[in-house]
Amino acid sequence: MNSAATAIWTGTIKEGNGNLTTQSETLSNAAYSFQSRLKKETGTNPEELMAAAHAGCFTMKLSADLTSAGFIPEELTTTAIVSLINGVISKSALHSHARVPGITKEQFIKIAEQAKDTCPVSKAYNMEITLEAQLK
Image (tube, rainbow, N blue to C red; front, top):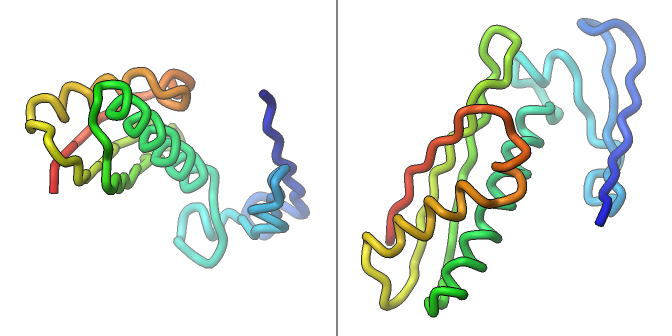
């Protein structure tokens, strides 16, 4: 399976801007710029997209691993915070909350840690990955 996205950039790094379009067109000419990256102006940025990819992938893997272990998740919510520090993307912090009937806290933590370590995005990221996982 291959997935694609296209970035178009015009201008200098500080004054320029760009847009991103994904193969599925879920993102279609989505704005991004130096200002949206560092000053939180309107538009996305690479770290936000990495966070979305990590949160989505981890949550899907957690659902698969819980189901394989015989638990049916009612709801899984994950936030990923990707950190850009001194020009280096250095950390992804996963914060996950779940409603899973019949599972103990210990079972849940074990399965969540396994999902953190084995989701394809975690495997691709060469950075510190942390997890805070809680049952609702």
